[in-house]
Length: 138
Image 1 (cartoon, one colour):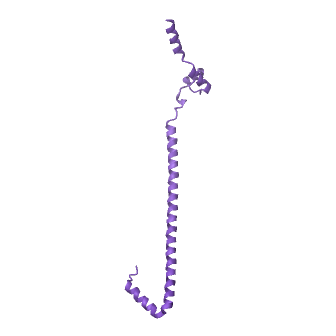
Image 2 (cartoon, rainbow, N blue to C red):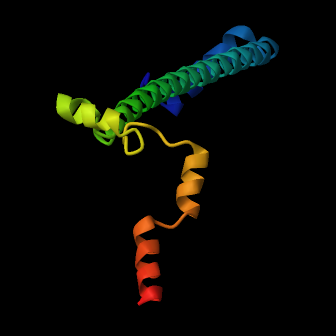
């Protein structure tokens, strides 16, 4: 970085010992060591802070992508539900509506209640009973 070799550092140290003396040189080296240590800690803390900010940014991006995915998923579900919903009876003609309303028993628009479904499930179809009766008689 500064392009200083060991020989230049040795020359600077010898000059510093000659000017300051051995006692003051040791104190100065301790002080330089403390300042370098403080600078290292500051740089390490700065690196940690930058990494934390990067992680927070990544987490925010991931959360944004997740919400986007959830929105797309919701849209797809709604589209699928719209495609697979039963066809409404709005396509029936006026005559068909009249006949359907007259035959309330056979009205496909009328929802069956639970009790009606149970009765239908328990009672056998009339045609089947008629066939069985004919077979027994003959």
